[in-house]
View 1 (cartoon, one colour):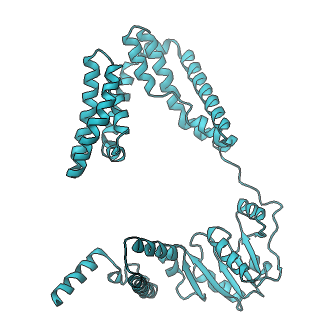
View 2 (cartoon, helix red, strand yellow; view 1 turned 180 degrees about the vertical axis):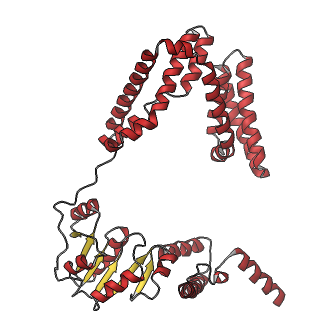
Length: 400
């Protein structure tokens, strides 16, 4: 007990200052060296005291996990973990007595199944107890149903302490190993039982002409904002989506969403697109291109079309399309964050406005050239970049 408490206190009052010093030096290799030295030293101390080296390594892991630098240490020792874990299982495999297992194959298989069933039932029960739904709880139980590799350490220690025989340790190890080997097969076999069944569209109301002035296709996180703002202005809106769960959820908030693929002209016609002034495609992805949009415009020439674009490439796919505008889904929110970040570090409001205006100008000109040429790398020199800013600063110095 004194050794364990002493190691923990050393980790708190010696390791932390040491890692802080190493962090200030900025030498990443020193982190690796210090982490490995801590594990080896802790194991050696426990071994010297007649205790388990594995216990010392475990305590070292606890000490390192309690350090503020745990994430950096975890990333640095990742390659070592993969190698040592492989060696660990190799050593476990070499300790198995195959003759003892061959004499009792049914016992080993039966005990492995009993272990899997017991752990799966217990973990599923705990999941249900803590509010998980039945299918996710079952999936958790199957995923964690195998024996743990720490059992190999316990069996070896028990054998060393003459609590169990070597034959028993081999059989126990074989049971745990077999349970581990079954996990991926169990996950594949229970896939249908673990996953929620797709909700059927049976009984869902298909679009109909309800006199709305705008048709919004896609009622996800993007379409919800668009639709609610239009409704707030008093513009009647017809909503169309293919996500059954979303349609049901929207109903609980008082929103009527019809089921259907809003990129099809026949579904749009049912939704009243022929008489609508606005067609707004707010669905996720980049399924719409120039050809599809031309077909929609030809079918509903009176409607003004707006499209939600996934990224620059999506906008480029719509080159020459008869639309009033394509809005990149993350552009405005990213600009808002950049403005707030500049304000947080004390940038003047006028400078923030100037920077935003310059970015929008460059971005517009770059996107225009990209659409004309079809080259994603067109006008890349117009981007704000570290190299560009360095060149501009150097030019300013030369002028001065």
